[in-house]
Amino acid sequence: MGTNTTYLSNAVNQIFGCNLKSLLNWYRVQYAKRMLTCYTYKLKDIPFICGFSSKSTFYVAFRKYEGITPYQYVLERRPDRLEELEEVSDGRTSKSTAQPGLPSSQYAHT
Image (cartoon, rainbow, N blue to C red):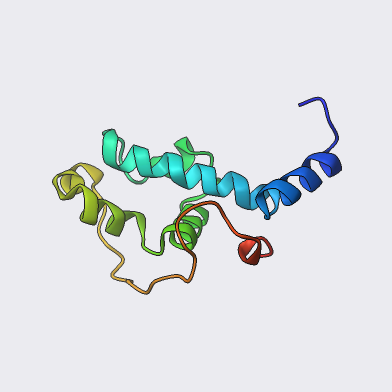
């Protein structure tokens, strides 16, 4: 990007109120939401398509920003896609305190 990582990190923190990793994960989750509702990818493939290094990292980030699992997200918005996803719900339904939208500074250190 033509700049050093310290400058970029400081700029992201100042503009968005979070660290670079949180901002990237937020954008990855937004992309995953489109993938879950608009395309025919399997749930097991979406984390890697969206840039997450593992399924568990994806689930943690998704729950952090959306308050529900990816499976629950599809269940609420596109129940017709459940069979396509070939994934069973993990049964956990507790909500996160994070609100949808850009990550706030209170989540930047997690």
